[in-house]
Image 1 (cartoon, rainbow, N blue to C red):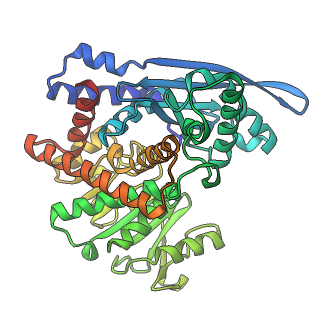
Image 2: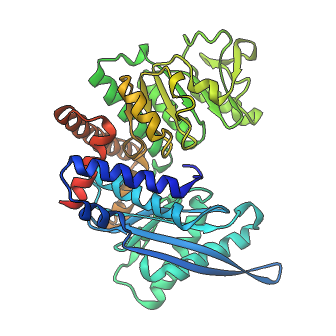
Image 3: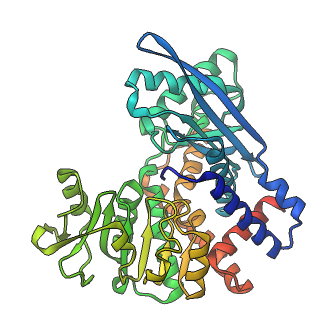
Length: 431
């Protein structure tokens, strides 16, 4: 998940799309307008000591909709966090949780800070202060935060520690492991979920595999290009490769790698590529096939070039808005799996859909993460413990079922997958 830009435009675009889909499903404009308006928008001041002086940071939490259950959404630390950004992300979370039929609503939070400028002690102070200011409106049955941009299990461990400290002092109807259900994305040793790290990428690979079955495509004959090789991109490529898909090129922020002649014939050894990247600090030169990395057989390419390769499947898993009217005419892939949030502009989506490109929307493709968060919350509330194999199997079942429903909806109503996804999500919230 990545930092967004032009948030006002993105919210307006999201709202227009929801209104457009809502009309197709016969919802009144007043109902749609009411849905778009968040239940609560919270802005807090977060004073912490830095070098002996008090500095005040600004934090946000937008609780969009809890018609289906507690609010659910991440917390990001970034210098460009804004109310508008958090607002649109909370809206998408409401849709995402409803789409895969989880008993959650949608929320999102953030702090305006560059975490790289803080010491670990200062970062911990900021994390704990955020919880202190929001304690009354978060909790296992109220609003359940999780990691997002520039936050991680360590930061969440500070947050849950602070939450439990206050809860035990003030009295709380939850006790024991159930209190840990106030946050997800926790370290495994703090009642986190084994398999959470893999979940988003695994979920996307499951959806691609189900789509291939519907389209009658053989994975071993299906070439895949993945833009973004962070946590999501790596695990997507790993599990898609396990399903038999041919991952022919991957990229990070510095560019990507494929075979020297760009024949796109050989599937990469994904785990070796990761080892090489960690050793070199970049993907360039990490052309690894069959357990061997050979810089002489590889070719470096830019992220822009990767998007325009003649592959069967294109997977933008890093930045938003990378497929636009500027490059949509050069996109050759027949399938796009949106692992990033909002990687395809509305204009490009319409253009490519009319050309017959099948686009798996982000609210389905990357919903494995929030689905795993549900399992983590569930194990905390119920006092159980999932094994990684059980987590991945649960994810496979939940996402396969969601995909089948969306596919059938699209076929029955003549809608593309995005329209069908938004329609089902709205139906699950508004009816």
